[in-house]
Image 1 (cartoon, chains in turn green, purple):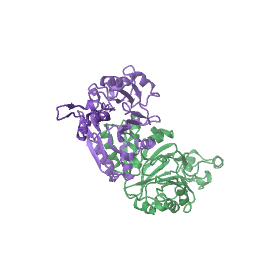
Image 2: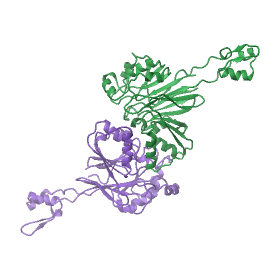
Image 3: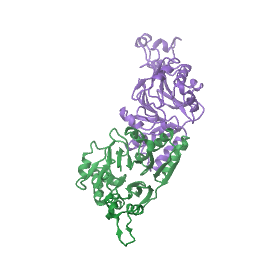
Image 4: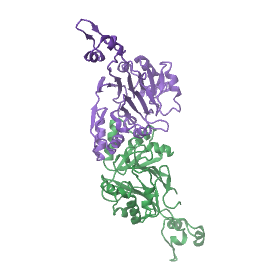
Length: 307
Length: 307
C-alpha cells in the first residue's frame, strides 16, 4: 500500500534556480493529494510525470504567494485539458474569493465542479475521509492564518490466518466479524478474539505537513507520533532573530518539534534562498533529532515502513 | 543604441515542457520593459540573467492566465529583494483589482510604489514616453478586452558634420538649432538647413506586440511600418475554424497582417501546445510574407537595423 510524498518545491518566498516554491504530492494508496501550489507547480508536476488529472484534492496552507500562486494556472490547465471530475479545494476562507476573482476577470467558467472547503481557525479538524484515509487540518503559528495537514491511514480489515480458519472451523459471518476486529462468541460460550485468528494489524501510518510556522509547542499534540513530519526550516540558528520576527523556524527548532511530537522521521524544507548549501540545516537538526533528512525536489519519500 | 526583444515565453494557454506562457523583455536604449507575464516569468528572467530590478514598466495585454499569472509573484519578489523604485503597471482596468486582492489577502504591503495605468478601450493611446521612446497601446480583437503595444523611437538630435561646422563657421546656438532639426537664418538672409550641415537622420525603429488576437483588418493601421511585429499564431490553417471560434490567428493570417501593415519582419509566437513542431508555422507564413521568423525562448531579436 503506497504512502509517500513527492517534493515539487521546497524553497521559501521566491523561486530560484535551485528551488521551487512550496508544493508536494502525497500519494496514499494510489490517490494523489496536492499540498500547496506555489508558482510553477504545474510545470513541476509535468517534469515528475505526475498526471494532473489524477489529483482530486488540493490543500493550501496559507495565502502567501509562494504557497498558492500556481493554483489558478493549475485549475485553468485542468479545465483546458477537458477535466470533468470535481476538485476539492481546502484552504483559508479567503481562498474562495481569490479563485473567484481570477476566474471572473479572465471570463473563465470551469467545465468541472470546484468544491471549496473553508478551514476553521483555532482547532484541529477532520476535513476529508474515505475508506482508508483521514485528513486533518490544524493551525500553525504564522504571520497570517495558516494550517498544517495530517494524513492518517484508517484501520484496515485484518488478515485471517488460514491455519486458524481451519482450526476453529470459522463460518463466513465469523470471518467478517474477526477481520473487522470484533471477537466472536460461540453457542458453547467460548470466545475467539481477532488476536487468536488473525495476523497482527499493520501499523497505521501518518504524514504531517507543517509549513509555514514559528516554533510553537502546542503543535506537537496535533502531529504526535506521525511517521514522517515535513517541517519548515526557513532559517539557520544564526538567523534565529529573523525567524522569530517572521514567524518562521530554524532547523534546530524543527528538530526540537520532531522530538517533542515523537515522530518517526523529520524532513526539513522551505529553505531560504540566502543559503548556498543546505548542509548546515541537517547539521543543526541532528543534535536535536537524529532521524532528520533534507527535502529534495523531484524525490519521493516513503511515509513510515513500506507495507 | 540597443533595441531588441528577448522572448521568455511563446507558448499558448498552458506551460509545457517546450514552451512557457507569454512574456518578453523589450530593451530600448538599455531600458527594460516587460510585456506580459505568464506563470514562471520570474524564473525565466533569472535563467536569461536579466536583472529584474532593472524593469520599471510592465505591460499586460489581457487577463487570460497565460498572460498575467506570473505578475503577482514577480511583484512580490521585487518587494522581497528590497526594491524601492516604483513600478508602472499598464493593463486592463480590472488588473488593479486583481493585484490588490492578491496583496490584501496575503497581507503584503509593497515597499515600493506601484503606479497603475488603466488602458482605454477602442482607440490607440500614448501610454508612456521618455526622451527617446514612445509606447502606445491599441485594441486587439480577442474574447476579452485585449491590447497590443507599440514601442517607437523618438527623433534623436542630428549628428553634425564637422566639415560643415568649419565650412559655415557655425556658432554654438546655430549648432543646437540644426541638431534639433531646425534651419538657421543668418543676418545676411542666407539659410542653412539641417540637411546641409548634418548627417542624415538615423531611421526611427518600432516594435509591435500583438497577442492575443483574431485576424482583424483595422489592426494594420495601428502597427503600420513597424520594423518588427510579434503576432500571435496560435494555430495552423487546418485549425482555422478553431482559431476563428477562439479569437486567435493562424500563421497565414499573421503573415497576411504583416503584409497588410507593411512591417519589416514578422515574428510568429503563442504556439498551441497541440503541435509537436513549429516548422509548419513558418511554412504557412512565408507564402504571405517572406520575412517571417519563429519566436524562440531565450533568444534575443534585434528590432530593425542595429544602429
